[in-house]
Image (spheres, rainbow, N blue to C red):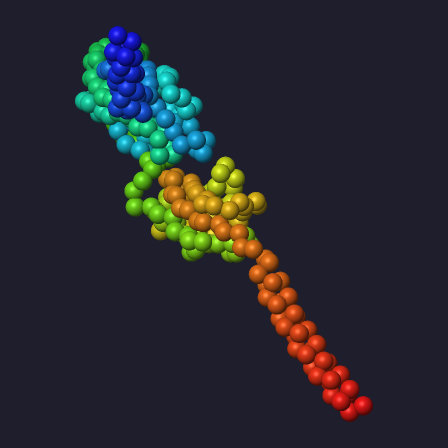
Length: 306
């Protein structure tokens, strides 16, 4: 009976271990966002809530809330697994469905939701009707002279005209506002190329990048430390030296931030300086042995002569 109970207990333990082994290692919630409310007129505010977000631990850039594409940034909240931020839809947005995107900049999480822009109520233009124009005409003044002397005065006519100004106010919705441009979404055709795959401390290293925003500042970093700066030319290309203040053996990841994030890597190897010393010692010992042999022969010849 004890053997049967022991076997049953061992079977239950084995089943539990098998169940744990078959459970996925990553059971975290996938990244997702919600917008509240889900619709409103252009320029109205809404809240973006998120959960399940992760990011590159070497990245210190804030998250981005985008409108329709990477060129329209609504907010830049701090990196967090869960959170919420209040934003406003652009005033120039057309009625209809628009995509709201929340992403972490350095190859982390990204999620999307839909926000609908509705038509705002229109107001009829106010029209002011001008009053009628009144014209006043004074009668002519006639003077009759005495019989002997006749004096005729000219006729005097005075006309007064009042001018009325009509003001018409028309409300027109403006759609000529320019679309703002900001940071670019990571990716595209950009690339970071290093002229060497392996280096030793003190070796020169050059980084060349493409696909950047023309004229943008470029900052190169590795393990949170700046290792180079440059400026992209009119074609979005740059080239600069990579200089490590301190360097350890192993693979180093280099990131270039120029509106997009470009990534490259280089292996650092430390070579031993004892090889040259060992070779020198071997040569020195060799010559010492030859010298000792020659001296021994000379002494032997001298003894024979004596």
